[in-house]
Amino acid sequence: MLVTKKIVFQVLKFLVGVGCILILYFKLEPQLTIENLGILSHNMKLKNGFLLLILSIGLVFVNWGVEAFKWQAITQQVQNIKFRVAFKSVFSGVCVGNLAPGRATEFLGKIIYFNSELRPAITVLHFVNGLFQLIVTVFFGSMALSNNLNLFSGANSWVADLSILLSVMVILVFCFILIFLNKLINLLTKKLAKEKSIEFDIKLTRSLLLKLVLGSFVRYFVFCLQFFLVLNIFRNQEVTTALLFSMMLYFLFTTIIPMISFIEPAIRATIALIVFAGTGFTEIELSLAALLVWIINIILPSALGYIFLVQQKFDFKLK
Image 1 (cartoon, rainbow, N blue to C red):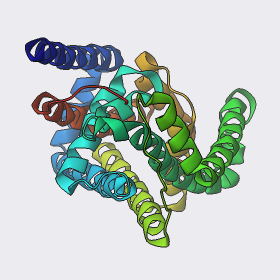
Image 2: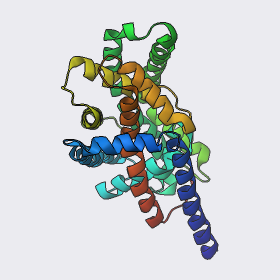
Image 3: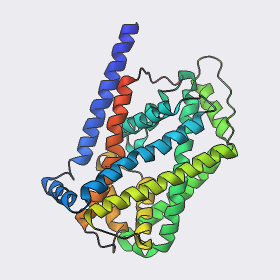
Image 4: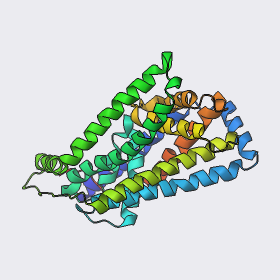
């Protein structure tokens, strides 16, 4: 029986790896043309291109390290884990998140580091943690949108309309979950438990809320800095209000608008063309910058996350 389980888990790990590679390949293949790679290579050799890339990659560990800090903080009342475990959990989630549109499967990669009977509660906390980051993105994105409504007229009006609608829905869902957090956790745990379920009482203390909010703000500024560094690989730019608003809009739209898995990079590139209009960047530069940011923040962490998954003994039980 133990041998059979071991074989099943090894097969699962293999399938996750193959699935991620195939999905990421089909996402990248349309844009990683010889011409685009040549342009990217040319810009890397100019001035500080390679240094800017290294700095952007270095910020990956700041970004996901802060996320691991938040993840450790929000799960502490359910199961106390070390930062090292939280770090692995977050990166594994990035990897498994590639398997479904909207990264809907990300929680599966994260919960395997927790005791099986606690996973329903951890799953709910995963979405709560994500909502804190989303609210910060909506906050800054809404500020930028109110100052750039002129960009969204005619054929582009749907982008703003959809974002406003989804932002309102996110705020309402966020408030609802915070109010009924324990009821949701206990209901899900009771539904999935074979035996008597654990009764949870998660307290959103001032200290915890401060960690989640400040951590989300720090991550947001890291995103902005990272995007700014990548843009400067292609064209030197000063930090201007217009450029900041463009980045805020980009993060709002790419976060709030549902992404169809296989054309995600193309959607991101299209959004970049809209929000960075008038900033001096060419279509190819914006497309490659959006692609490069996505590769740095998703593909590289996914590779590391898969290594953690292979090393971890796990199952996907939720009860």
